[in-house]
Image 1 (cartoon, rainbow, N blue to C red):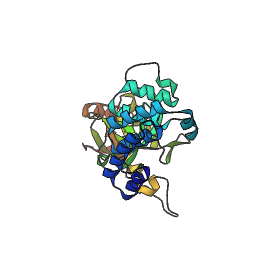
Image 2 (spheres, rainbow, N blue to C red; image 1 turned 180 degrees about the horizontal axis):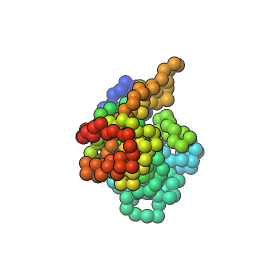
Image 3 (tube, rainbow, N blue to C red; image 1 turned 90 degrees about the vertical axis):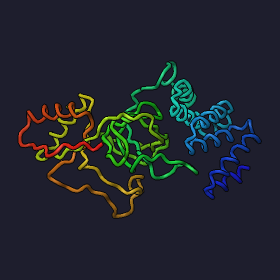
Length: 298
């Protein structure tokens, strides 16, 4: 049955793979391996209730022998954490993270909202990680910085390009498998792929063309906006990368260098009155800077 399932994977036959997974569970109801693999398939489909239920069973069947195979960690616990986070089942999510060995998430109740540092997340990933994976797609692929609030969800701290279909402060579900790295404060930080959007912020996205501003000027504006809960990204410095480079697989002699210009293209996030007031405060102490335009994008 397992061989038939793997053959269905290789053939890209999702329907047969799902049928074989169900049959395998009936044949081997006491097998951790069967429940874990079936839960992984449900994760690929984005069927979070089914993935949660199957990983709960796998968690109960986990043995010391299974632990030896996975170097002491229980991957079913991690996938249960993802599935229960997607469902907003915070009690189960906490149990899952503790079962994986992340004790800091236990001992409390309610939604998980812990400062887990900054992490880059690939919105709308263009490569599957699992056979038959249904990729979340709200727009074009873009890697953005996020405030990570648990092992499986984060809040977007960047101002994404409108083509991504995401906004500043959207809450996203993300996978736990690192997919390349980005640099933060001279350190390499893992990139995680988005699995879905949990909450839309509704914060408007704007674009400004600014002339005569130095890097220090832009940093001062960024600090001012951050103090007010608003967002800024310098879009003129974005590197538009192909898929291979984004995943850390560049070809020899291949690079993506942003075009240089006297004008800086800024992505801003916030409501018009708040942004207007902040921009006036910023410009009041600076001379020779011209905000050529401030346009609402969406």
